[in-house]
Image 1 (tube, rainbow, N blue to C red):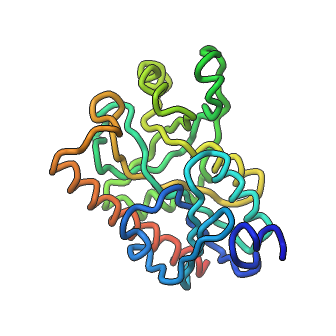
Image 2 (image 1 turned 180 degrees about the horizontal axis):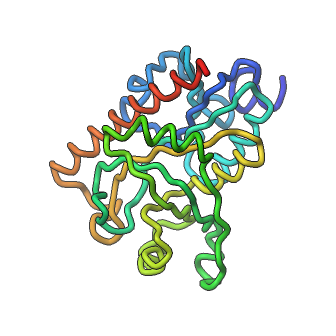
Amino acid sequence: MTQFEALFGIESSRIKKNCILLPMLPKGILNEFKIGNFKSSKLYGIGDNNDFTLIHTGMGAGFTGDAVLHLKESPCENVILFGSCGLVKARNGLSIGSLVSPAKCYANESFTELLLEKNIEPKVFHAHDKFLGDFLADGKNLGLKRVNCSTLASLKLEEQMVDSFIEKGVDVVDMECSAFFSAAAFSGLNAIACFYVSDIIKDMPFYLSLDADSKSALFSAIKDAAGLVCEFAKKKSSV
C-alpha cells in the first residue's frame, strides 16, 4: 500500500481532475455535493462523483496544505477550497451569508508569531488568476465577491487584529487558505477558494448563536455555494 492510499483510502490514480477540499463537513453538505460514497481513511475523508473528488481535510493549515501536496502525485489539475470564513467588518455589502472568493491571502499561520512577533510582515499567496476570473463570472448572479483574506492560527488573537486587517484591506479570515494557495502553486495546480461568511469578528463572533434571520441566510449561502462549485467543477471537467 502506498502512502497516498493509506492516507486517502484510494489509489492516487483514482483522483479526478477537479478536487474540492473541505476543512469541515457541515450537516447535509455531502448531499449538496451529490457524494454518496464518502469514506474516512487514516487521515482524510474522500468521496467522488463524475465531475470531482471531494476531500475532507480537517481544520488547520497543515492538514490542508499537505493534502494539496499529495495531490501533485495524482491526475488532479484544479483544486477548490470550500468552507466558512469570518468577516473582519460588515462593509462593502458583505455580511453573514455572503459568498466570497479570495484573490490573495496573507499567511499568518504561526500561532507563536501572532502572539509574540507583532511586526512581522506576512507573506502573501494568490489564487490562480484566470481560474478566479472564471469563477467570479459564474458566481456573479449569487453576489459572489472578490476579497482579500488572512489565514490565522488563532481564533482568540484575531479579535486583537481587526484594526490592522482594515489597514491592510483584509476582508475575511480563515484557517487554511494561505497554505492551500502556497501548496497549490508549489504543486502546479490551479487553485481558488469559495467561502461563505459565517461570523463577524467582534460584532457577531463565532462563539455566539446567530439570530433566526442570520441562520437562514447562512443556510441558504451554504446551499448556493455548493451548487455554484458543483457547476463550476462540471464545466472545468470537460475543458
